[in-house]
Amino acid sequence: MMTDSELLHYARQILLSDVDVDGQERLKQSHVVVLGLGGLGSPLSLYLGAAGVGRLTLVDGDIVDETNLHRQVIH
Image (cartoon, rainbow, N blue to C red; front, top):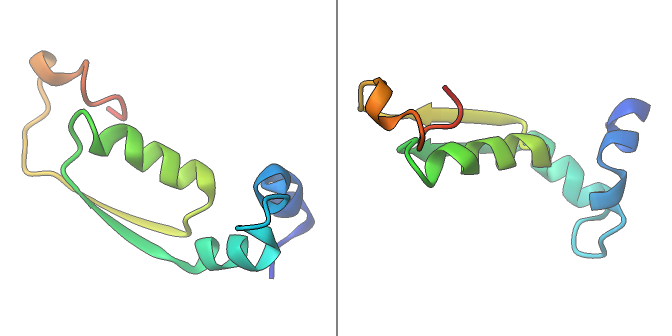
């Protein structure tokens, strides 16, 4: 069950006929694994979290250093 705060937060998504309240609930209960947090996986993780995905597992074998910070926006 979504709280009033969550309903307000995701109101614009809920208005979409392909999402509605049931779809937003499914997002909240979902689990997504993102493999690789470089130029694509890093912003993707942010977008999934902002969309309301309930649980994210982020996996990346790289070592964060100054040369790749421009691609890894979540660090």
